[in-house]
Every structure is written in C-alpha cells, then in structure tokens.
Amino acid sequence: MRDPIHRDVRDVPGYLAPVRQALTQPILMGGAPRPYAILNGTLAAVIAFAGLAVAGIIVGIAGHIVGVFLARRDPDVIDVLKRAMRIPNRLEN
Image (cartoon, rainbow, N blue to C red):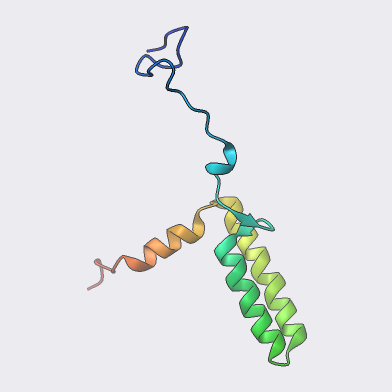
C-alpha cells in the first residue's frame, strides 16, 4: 500500500529519520571483521615474537585472506560464529 506523498501508509508524517549507511554495516579492518583482525594480528605477533618471524607473517597474511573471504560472503560471520558456539548441540545422540 503506497501513497504518493509518503513512503508507506503506516509511516507517520514528520517522523522519518534518515539512517546513515555506516550505522548499519559492521566495522571492518582491511576488509576483515574487526574482532577477527585483532585476534589474527595478535596470533601472528605471538608467533613472530616467539622467534618464527617468517611463520608469523605467513600466518598473519593467510589468516587475513581467510577473514576477508568470510567477510565478503557474510559481514556478520564473527557474530554468527560466536552465537553458534553458545548454543549447545541438541541433536547429538
């Protein structure tokens, strides 16, 4: 039901507020979700400071590529995984 004056018949005139796109999208760091990028960077730094600098760089780059791939498929992938980890497995025998 559309009205030519208002966007929707149920809308109250004068009470429409624009929402910026930045408020609806998740925060990404270099294309990867922010919590994932922080965790990945911390893990890569731990490996690098443990004496395996090349391995730390490789883990960091590979982890970031995986994070960017997951974020392109679903920007809320980290929130979904956190929620899925909290739900107990009820279908196991």
